[in-house]
Image (cartoon, rainbow, N blue to C red):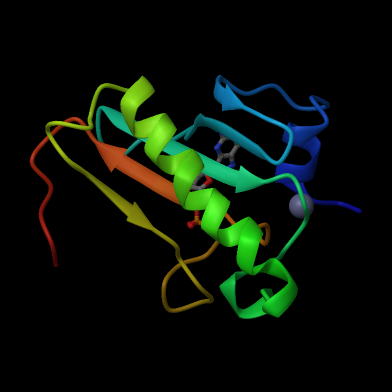
Length: 111
Ligand code: 5GP
Ligand code: ZN
């Protein structure tokens, strides 16, 4: 399968990994929009939130537990951070492998 993030999971492409366990990988976004900008992805290839099903309930819950760990590791637990998914064209989703953006390290604005 020709998926950029699956290649990053398999270490066929390099990335700056900040957290990894059996189900998730978290790595620095290549074009950060804030001092802390991490992508947290399931190792299972799921295209978007639109593609999750009832069988993914546990995995998606664990994704948020992994995000909390990453927030702690990145030192933004106290200062706060944003978690977001881009879903589809209007949100600007560019990579079709589910990824949770963790953004922080500065005061964030909201459009
Ligand atoms: P999206 O717009 O799909 O929600 O976010 C995709 C994100 O992946 C973007 O923020 C983009 O900068 C990041 N990205 C795209 N290609 C790569 C890559 O090869 N390595 C890393 N580390 N990040 C990438
Ligand atoms: Zn993938």
